[in-house]
Image (cartoon, rainbow, N blue to C red; front, side, top):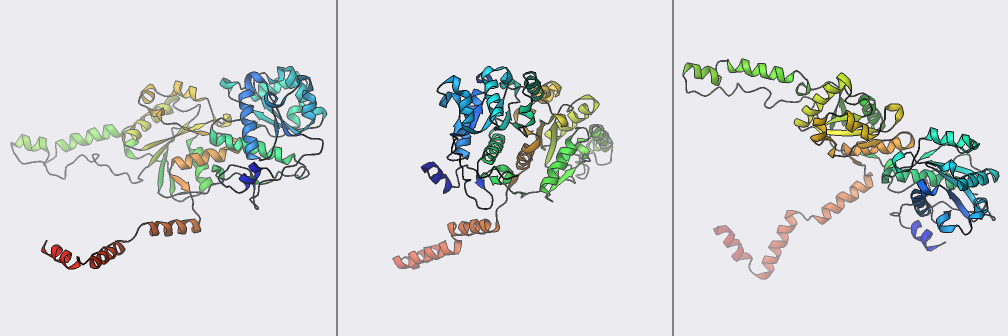
Length: 439
């Protein structure tokens, strides 16, 4: 066992793939004729930097693994097919122009000829070398390689944000692991985890959360319901009826109330008309000056998709957001990335969001990205943490923490007893007591 594998096996702080149940690092193996665990196929112009990340992180997640990357391992460009044949499986990084690269097509052809398992990873960010998946399918079909998609299984989305990228890397590592001789005959991939991964945390809410979900925010109710169903915490309450101070006719009612009170006996205006110097009765205050919110709202969900702030509903939502911010209610920003749920690029939101909110700093705080598929639980965990959720401690950990805290903070009685003992031993106890008594 190499030093790297040995060190990773006994240090739980290192992010490595571990088997559920045994908590051991998975055993890697290669067939006698194989030299690499995975061949990384990509086009230099749009995928080289990200594939380098995949190689580095995969070799850390799977200690002892060996990934072929041309910039590091290629000796002769004409031997690409031989390197593919000497790899247990092939990862295809789908980015712009991949199927128009002669070398990429050679690698794909060699993978199909040698019956290699394919792992497809998709770069979807068009601003960073990505392309729409449908466009890549069309490119693939135009080159007569449609079997690449037919035989590869689920396409893994690539992410750059660390918490989402870790799950993507885990999915890649699991697929690589499933191709190893020890696991290849199993129908299901081995069950694994990464210490510290967010989707494996059990979260709890220490304080009540009362979150307003507006009817004028399309999709917000579905998002909030999805969150509540996942965590089933009684401390999270969804409020769908807007409190009075968020309603659009509230200002008019407030003004009318002020006019009525100004004419009431005991008001300043009434007493002034009588020529009386007496102050107004304390009971006639603006009833809204210290309004009481029966629901005690702590947050307002602002679900951002292609329909947010659009049309008449958008104007009503604008009013509610402004009132909520003025009332000190925290706005929880959640950005939908699932096209099936109206997901859109964040740039569109700068076009649809009213300028007064943008200029007032609504988007100064980053929105939580909600991604579809296997990354959805990560998104929901991030939303929960924004609402104050924290990892739940086991009973043993909680008791240990409490005991440690008690040991580190001596009681006042122990401190005072120690002070008395020190005084008595120095012979100054009597004089000190008399001095204290005289004071």
